[in-house]
Length: 390
Image (cartoon, rainbow, N blue to C red):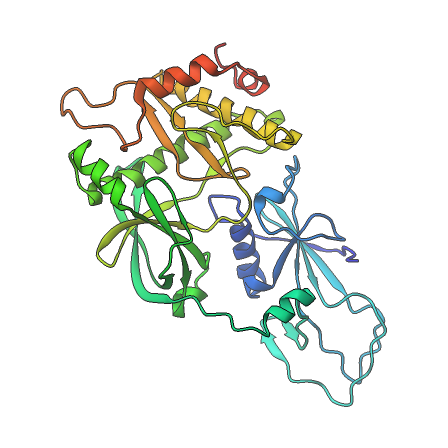
């Protein structure tokens, strides 16, 4: 149980995107506490969230947050309620800051324990996470560590307005030597920041995607280009998708509720091979619209939220086609909840007439994908909210 108290403190929120990591960064900066201690709650009684997709849309944009740290209670302390809560607000969100343990009788210690200094707070107790008996038994058997390759990577960012490439950051990281998933064209590896980079105010978990043998053959034979150029295009296409989605969000009425978003994707090289890198997004993956324009087949037991997600995805695709004067369409809508990744863009003309250069990437279904979506699509409530043509 956590009880709110006054006064409230305003917390600056300088980040462009409202993500769980960014919420924690803003609070960590304001209160001079590690972001790892920050916990986002559904209500002032819990439970905790692990991703933004689990947070229900709130019209007042208020989010409750606590810092889970222990407290020092020495001989002079006679408090029977060791929980202290403060609230703070930013431009986008408001937060609840909690320190201490649940109310319980406190045993007086003979001498104060050594304290770890976290700015304004004194921490003496760290509470262990809940671990199942099965997990404890598994720890009794040898679990081979994952082999990692330590490297220094430069993240290059593409500016959609400036049409320029810039170095966004340079990071020390450890990349798994074994891929954890593979798609039709790319292999995916876990990446974790290390050293000084791990202490920066950015996400520590990332995903690196490299091109497999099949994709290299298609890119060289069909598009007549190389992997480096195509990888740069991949990032450019992602930024176009991100821009279109942000426009959709900015024009959506309040009754639309939560909208889709894309995180930034960067270009990098690893072992001298072109690759893309993006923040790791936890949660369950779902494909909503395929890159050929067809809607994904939902399971028979799909709940209302998933069906609503598909309807909203159709509204987004319809919007991108109409807002671009029917020149392009955002397809391959997939991801974890409202956080999307790996888009594809179909263009009405597959190549530029003057330069004969193919638009975007090798999975551009062009007019075939656009026509397939339009033939199958039936305007829904979200299309009407956006005042799209029927």
